Amino acid sequence: MWSKKNAILTFVFFSALFGCAQDSAKISLTWRKLYDGMEYCEADAPFKSILNNSKISILKINPEKFEFQLLTSSEHDSTQTAVEWADNFGMNVIINAGMYDLTKKLINKGYMQNYKHLNNAELNPSYGAMIAFNPSEKKIPNFKIIDLNCERWDSIKPYYNSYSQGMRMLDCNGKPLTWNKKNQSCSMLLASCDEEGNIYYVFCRSPYTHNEMIQFLLAMPFKLVNAVYLEGGPETSLYINIGNTQIKKIGSYISNSYPNDDNDHFWKLPNVIGLKPKK
Image 1 (tube, rainbow, N blue to C red):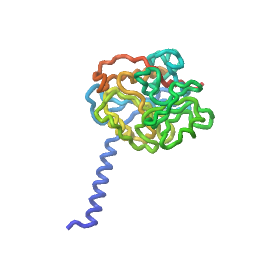
Image 2: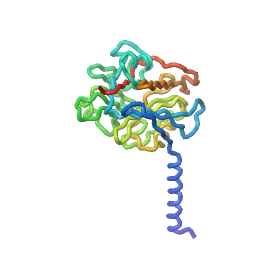
Image 3: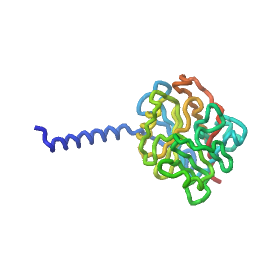
């Protein structure tokens, strides 16, 4: 006869078993120091993609040791590759600042501001994440990813000079968001942070769906919060040139518009975020 005690023991057993499965599924990371406050690693994704090496590249940054710049074509009158943006503005790392409007190719799909320059003055109501940097006061974090569902925009806006709005992948508590693009897979770049304020740029050339990538973030050996999607497909760019290290990560595949792994060069980008060490 099935007793309440048996039911409890069974529940405990399967809970423990599930917990062990979750622990064994954690992504293993081995960090390599590139610079004071900057580490890099490449890890195997939990399962293989249909293309390329299924590697996830992660750049970990202590934002208090670096200065960040938002570089936009609407302000500087030029689209450039990640390498060109870095060389022309003295940056050591360049990433996409966010998805841009294909009908207005200089304009971010969400709000974008750099000091007095407005690339896009309209908040996108469906974009729940905001990257904020260049603080107006020294006592606040140098770089922050904000969940607009957890913090009010009008209470945040006075405290930073540079903003780029994007789509959430993890919320302010580290909980996953479900994306509707279930059948779309692509190369991908996103940014996230941990509870200590470290920033992570996460790149993957091998195509995965957005929901799969969100599960990979949850499998990291530390808790991530406030993950924001930055770009997918061949525009996806991560360029690192610091100390004796140069790393070029270039996207390619996107299932609905560029379904191949053939891209071998950085594309010109309208809006990027650069960083360099503080003096």
